[in-house]
Image 1 (cartoon, rainbow, N blue to C red):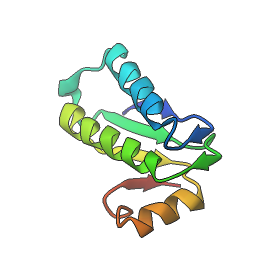
Image 2: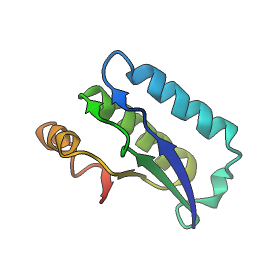
Image 3: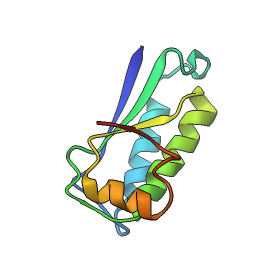
Image 4: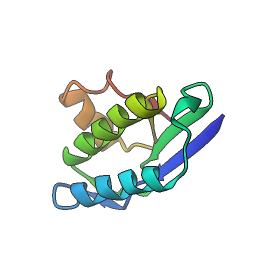
Length: 103
């Protein structure tokens, strides 16, 4: 399985969310992925290990990237190394069960 890693910045808040989304979308366009490879051979991972400050805007970025992953590659976006703060925001927003979380 081919893992495509999207590494998030240290700070993903309302004022930086669009830049973060643009950066990841540009990366996906520039990375020559075969859209037909599908979920069996691609795992798209959002690595939030470096993110120290997040707010609800990061959820919008993650949802958008998840929608893109599902439509282009047939697989969900996997969220890795999310802080407890982010998981709490997802729970409060009723989005925790919509997203794929990895320890």
